[in-house]
Image 1: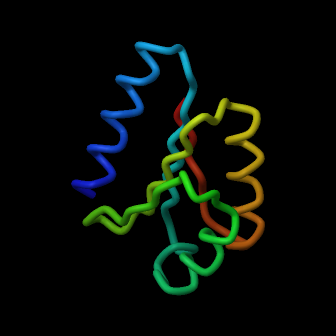
Image 2: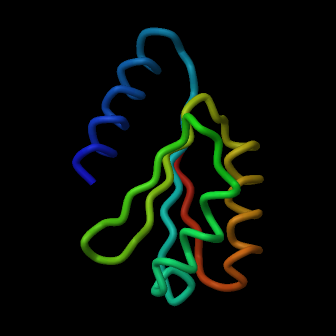
Amino acid sequence: MTTLRQRIENELDRTMQSERLFSLLCLVGPAVADRVAAQRAVVPQLRRIDAVAWSTDGALYVLLPETGVEEAVSVATRIRNRLDRGRCGLGT
């Protein structure tokens, strides 16, 4: 999570300087309890510039640089469909 926090801080700085967007997904619940299966569902939906990290409480965070709300909702929907259950939170 330390690396992801640094990436988020970098994205915040970039956003303030260049008005570029980024989004952050938070996946929680039974769907991500099996970390290996969750990663298999999530990683194929991501780009090379995206980042993922597990929190100590079992949530999976996904950083989506250069991504506005519409595209982030699309990514979250694809991930949720692959997971087949659970909740996705979205912050933009």
